[in-house]
Amino acid sequence: MQAHFGEVKIEGFEGGDGPYCFEKAVVMRHNEGGMGKERKLQVFDLLRCNARRFCGISPAGKGQETNERGEPIIRLTLLMRRGSRSFKNAAAVTDIFARECAKVEGCTFKVAQSENLSFCDQVRVMTYTDVVASPHGAQLTNMLFMDRNSSVMEFFPKGWLELAGVGQYAHHWMADQSGMNHRGAWWDPLDKKECPFPQQDLDCFNFYKDGKVGHNETHFAEWARIVLDQVKISKMQIATSSPTNEPQPNSNACKC
Image 1 (cartoon, rainbow, N blue to C red):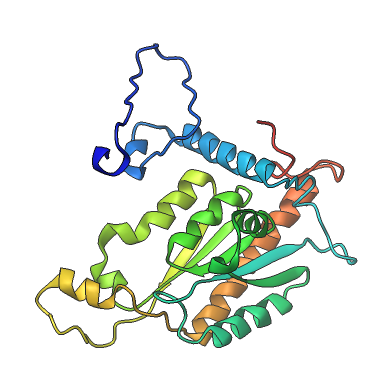
Image 2: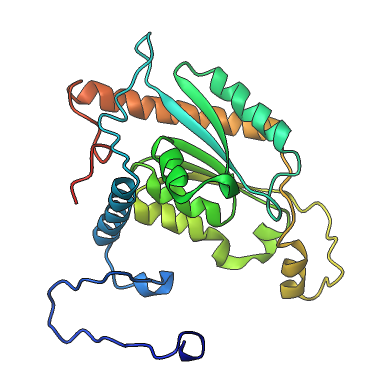
C-alpha cells in the first residue's frame, strides 16, 4: 500500500468495545466472518439508507402501490452489461422477460445498461426494482440498493458451473447477507469441452471465464413466470396483513 499511496496511517481498536467511526472504510468479504447474520443485515440497511439519502431518494410507501384494478405493482429489471458475460442475444432475452412480465397484471418491465448509469441512477433503478435479472458480474452488487426481500435471478456463461469453484456463489452469499431472495441461477450448458487444455482446470476456466451467456427460451420463460408469481403472492400477503396507510417494512424513508 505504501508503494501506491505513500505513508498509510494504521489505526488500532484500543478504545474498547464501543462503536468506531470512519469517514471511509473498506471491508473485504473475508473479514465479515465474525459478524452475525443480524448485524450484516443492519450494515446493508445502513448502506442502502445512506445511498438513498445521498441521492435524494425517499421511497415512502413503496411496496404498497397497486394498479387501477388493485393488483400489486411488481417492478422487473433486466440489468445488462457489455463485453464479458453479457448475453449473446440480448434482444431475445429481453423479449422473453418482457413477454412474461406482460402476462402478470401489475408487472412493469425495464431494461437498464449498467455502464450507462451514474451512481445515483444505479441507486434509483435498484430502489424501484423488485426483481433483478442479470448476468454474473460486478453490476449485481447493486442488489444491496433494493428493499429487503427483493429477488435476484443470475446467469452464467458455459464452463462456470464445472470450473469456477465456490467463488461463483458470491452473489448468493451477498443476497443472503443483505436480506434478498436469490431465486437461483442458470448456467449455460457445457455440451462438449472446447477448452484446448482439457487436463488443466485453471487454464480451462480462464478460457471460458469471459465468455458470453446464451439463453434457453423455455427455461427462462418458466423461471420468470415462477419468480413473478412468488413475488406477487408475497406482495399480496403483505398488503392483506398491513394497514393500507402503512408503508412496507424496509422501504420507508430511512432512519439513519
